[in-house]
Length: 306
Image (tube, rainbow, N blue to C red; front, side, top):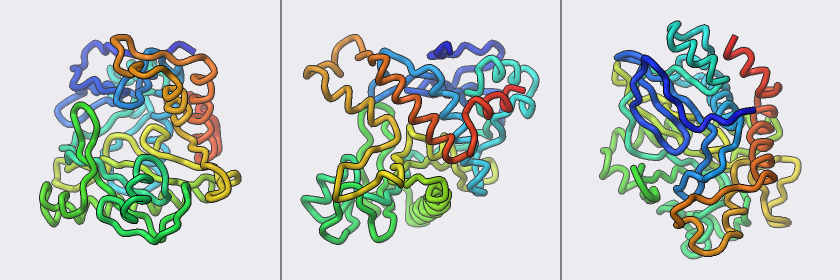
């Protein structure tokens, strides 16, 4: 499979080229989101793509937008549902393209956490709380919180997103919008968690983006519940307190990068990945989709480009 790391789509206007997605304008109301095979970690695009990753991301997001039953910007990942000129691009992109309605994104990352993992562990061990949310003592790494918690962050154009307390979020966006962001995010997390449990997965944490559509409604946007934006555990092997949890996302990439000499991430040339890490990463992305949807990504791609 040939990796797609950059798109140039004749007849469309490039709006944004992010770490992973290229965003193209279709018309005054619609955009085409293309999940490339670029992969980023620690706020840097790496020098080695993961061929096929973009298709896995696109089909996973499409699965969730169709499954959750919540209002979103999603129109379709299927080329036959797109305008003819756009459909031709979508077919060539091999299941990496999604047609969406343009929305005004709220500049906040809406993070929901159901289990203890990642960078917030240190704050919990130190303060017994995460971003102002108090938690009971003794939760092991990978252990479940009594209820999922909403821990928003800033949405930085460059560099690291910064954590926000709920009070800080209210000050930034207002009381009413803060409550809507929290409630919509927790609702989506609850619905997705149940589907994950039924599929043998545990949804540890995820981040949502929400935006206002042309009618002023607050809807889900960007991607949804992919291994790029979420941390999953395999239920059959998850033993918090007994052994370290294994995250079914791009943790294998982060783990490899941490073995590199100091300064590697700041060097002029981005770090590259060995073939074994690329293969392991792609298989985790594909496995998450397979467990959730009950079929391989290739079947979804074939349907998308038909």
